[in-house]
Length: 532
Image 1 (cartoon, rainbow, N blue to C red):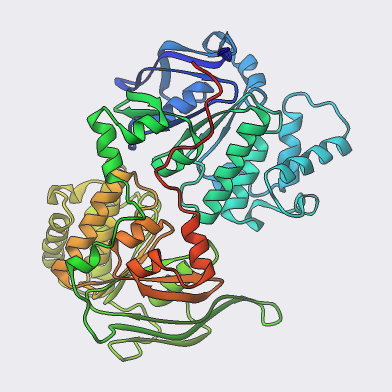
Image 2: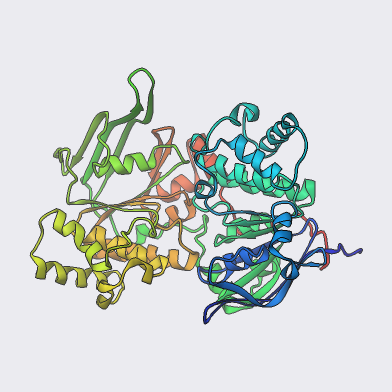
């Protein structure tokens, strides 16, 4: 078999931040048309490796050893001006968060035009516009010509990620580096993005590096896999071999932590929900916009949540999940319908017994406040306890969520992502609620940390008798933690039932569509294009 020449060769790559080694001696090769997945927990060095490939390290980071060669050219030996001509033209990157990467004040057409002109495109404006339309068509944006005039906020999360890919492909780069390209996307949108990357790889021969904490994503897109821990590569090889016969204990640990859709619910074995609903929702409707042109986010939602029960809520972006969560905690006033707690109308003010755990443990905590101040905030808001009692309660809560009470004096930046989410859970538990609404509480976390937070929520539910509304896009996680599952589509609940039944025998076509889109831990069937 003829070996395809390397398009990217990384040898002994080492990156340091001050006295800390973030990447330690990473080696891999990538041929044209090859696909490589890089997995590992936060802090393993995945994203730092990706940034080092393009010499885009943040301040304080520097490559101290090793080399990165693009088609035989040592990128480390190039001056910055020469590197700028390569970035985007021959090696391009798709960043994790498209909303923070796209310029909110420029139209998508303007941003594509800037990308085309950045590398000396001298073709007329009309030709550049035609190329921009071609790129949006390529990544599957409907009415591409008409959408050039729209700003990023007019697109869905999946469409914004497609635009990021279009920008990266403006010059048919030989290597595409995608850093967590599907994090927090719903299964159907995630499948579309992964299918797009696979198609580009197969049709254009683009070499692809996909960085993710989701092993299902890697299995779906990459033929080779590299596992990182503490900045080092602990195992690499074919995806099929690593998924079926992992040799390193850490790889086995990662695989064991991955929720699987074929595993039955653990919730039914852990607790039995009470018979009378604690929270009852009937005919809930929420509309935005003007009276002439209302946009309905919720359309007559009916829902029951029982004591000690975990009800999983799933659906695509825009289905109304988060709007429902905010209506239940009175952050949004419903347009019609009723919400009853223990059979009574709780009124328009936030209810002490219904608390919310937010999705993003980074942005949901005030960086200027200590962990203790953050946890005590709802106690002050509801007038619970004096200063000494609040300090005691904060210490109790930190212990309850598995943190040292001495951590109360530290700021959020001093904690890991999983620890920050534990602080968010402690804050929600502070006023002793009966209902905990968890809005995507683990979507931003690595699989092993995700498993720890899920186990923590299950333990707290058993100990405190909580009713939990668990909102997530990951159906495997939802099945694992839920007694029942409710499926939302376009503002309505289209199916509700026992968790195992909904997953194994869905009744509504939309539920079946969501289930079919979930990435499985089965390696991509495409054959490798090189023997490197």
